[in-house]
Image 1 (cartoon, rainbow, N blue to C red):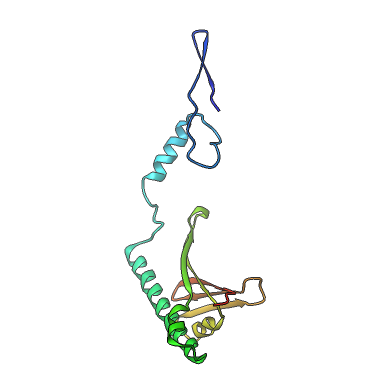
Image 2 (image 1 turned 180 degrees about the vertical axis):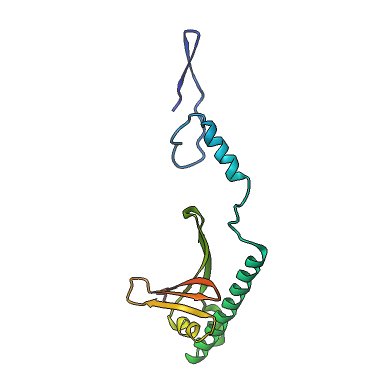
Length: 161
């Protein structure tokens, strides 16, 4: 929406501003000085969100272990169900990492999505697994556990394949 600009008694209109989003901006006013200072402070650095290099390497190691456990579990389940090798290669789960940076809760979590809950049974047998809880009666069955210091959420997918 163009705003009228008055210059010495005559009224002119600004050219319409381009919006690069679905909705228009809440305000077109120039930001206050405090807002600019806070923005510069935010742009100044990562505030330790990603952690130290040692912590990052530990998380990468955990993800590698979990990925290997998942592949081993898929092979075991496929063999127990006498699935052909071609089907075994196409089945699997998916792991998603996420964190609540916007909520100022910088813990990195991992979500494992698979078709059955037998992966949870396998995880319970591993020594690094602690604080495991399962809510299988939920709409989307959820399992929460801590693996080697990393919180893992497990969701079962109701897929045909």
